[in-house]
Length: 420
Image 1 (cartoon, rainbow, N blue to C red):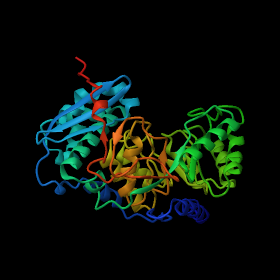
Image 2 (tube, rainbow, N blue to C red):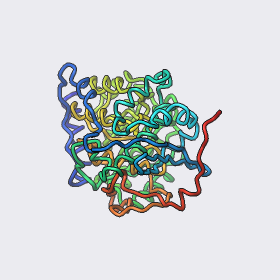
Image 3 (cartoon, one colour):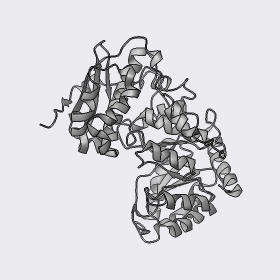
Image 4 (cartoon, rainbow, N blue to C red):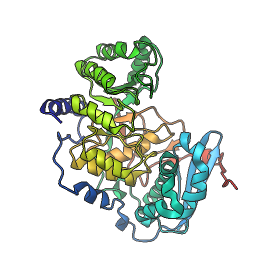
């Protein structure tokens, strides 16, 4: 990272930190890692099983379905019950894997052993051959259910089970647009509506055509939007742009220079996500912080990317990467290297709730967390409305995830049986 790039990195994220307000950690410009340092960090335990003095024996883990919505219900032999929301969009395709290989593995075991059990599950019946989103989204669904179960049993929020203590409850968010292919003026109108709805001080929109080998979703859309968004929202708005693997290196550099010229704070996934070398080439050549990580499924590859400064902002996905324990290890490695770990948000019913809890306890989640709107699932929460006001959402502080999904709603769901 060059001196000029470090300065831009500090300035870009610093502006966001000022907008986000108190409780956000400043991001160092980077530090030299000692040999083997990240290996040691990744090996450190995450789950604080010592906070649970008695066993939490898993009695059952069920997948429930109503129409196109899924829930996970976990029960302990000691009488606790948890109902959580998985990543529905992807689990709908791969749920037989959850029912056949993941959920049964944990039944009868002590949930306090969750962290070492994840390693055993990975090896069980050669599950490692299935590594990728299909496997890890199932693991995340079960892990989150068991974390909620342990939180309810201990009376502690998830963040306390995974760290030395919750650091922040009021989480500043950026509102992300999921649109691509609309005209620049239409996107501006949509972004205005998102800002009006949330009061967010940061927004993100999509560039390019998504895995499109340099093609734009509409001719000239990207080049028109970059200055237009800045002109529309002014210098005080923090702007992020997501290319979704649209560009080769020369094209990404050209787009990145335009983003730099207009003071953008993040260029997300400029090159094909698995071409780590292309992303590093872009990141090394530019001042604007480059983000990467939503598609990554390997802890070791994350370690390599952090060691080699492939990106400036580390962006795992809680569901795609297998849950909190694995993502916390990534965040710890990133923090050691002076990099923020800002989660990618999966589009699920309570994905933003999952993200809020992660941001509540990691050392440096970055200035803003991704937000794609509130859930339509009925719930009760005594410690937060989970509504975005003035660009901030409060993280619940009750046991587990701190919410109760309405019992009448859950009763609409039927148990999904394993495929025979």
